Length: 229
Image (cartoon, rainbow, N blue to C red; front, side, top):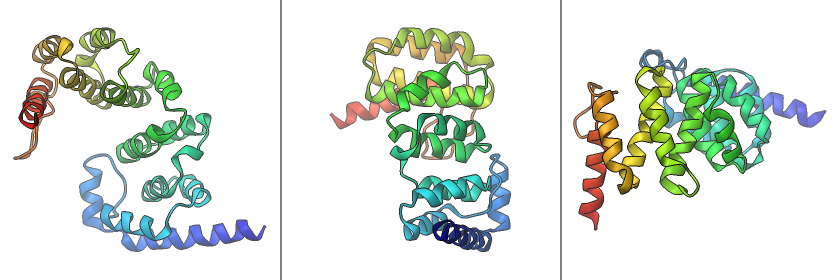
């Protein structure tokens, strides 16, 4: 009982600190990207560094359903401590793009159930959930392509990416680019699919950044690889 009370006290203190860090201008910028919080991410990371890893606190912060608290939870949790079903529920609860992105990249990718979840999410009817499956597939394309059907993935991308909802389309496009970058034998087809579908062709890109349009992305990354060798 005392431990529960202590955790409650810490949760209240952390929530109060997050409220103090709230900045209206930061919130305005974040809301343009679908994220409903106003905490500067550098300050959030500094708070996480101070709190260090605390799995129980992370779980309690997640339960608040507050976006800033959930982002903090993902920074102080132990990724390998979550059960498969727990992560599945968390992903379906992740309402905002940043929470979804951090959950997949900072937690799920480091969890022993990542491959099982990849297969579960990949074909999910919810496009946001499916986008997580594609993100995990992209990770495998780059790091563990063995047993992946790359030609089959290109078939799906060719058939479905053009009309996919934004988040799913973005994830599919990343997978397309990764296949083209990492696997020379599939590069010509990946470039051809990108050219024909024209997904993200006109996406505004800041100076010095690489366009997410797959043909430009693939060619630029391959050029850099050649420059490094």
